[in-house]
Image 1 (tube, helix red, strand yellow):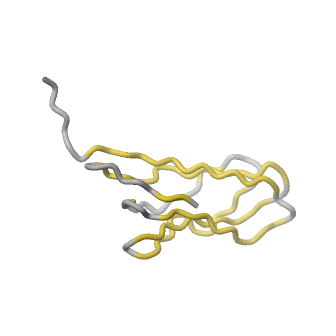
Image 2 (cartoon, one colour):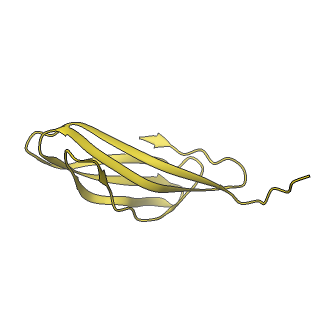
Image 3 (cartoon, rainbow, N blue to C red):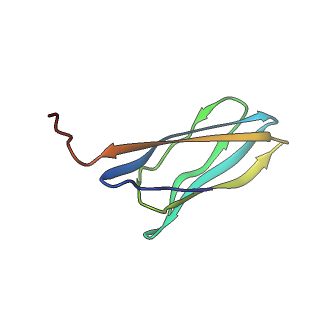
Length: 99
């Protein structure tokens, strides 16, 4: 898993989660956010196989020091080398003014 760091004046969100296995059949995965507001399931028990897959994401704001972790569920066959990429967007909450 990993922790989220919140720079000053930023909104943070996960915009996409993409996953695949190198070989084998498939594996079910969930992505969980754990933080001061409790646990939130961001990706719920979705199947990942040998083709790159965009996982369905439940939107949730991220906060400073939230912990994001992956839960491995049911295996089908012998999946190997699971890769998961989490795309995080940072958006400024202030408007910069040009001189």
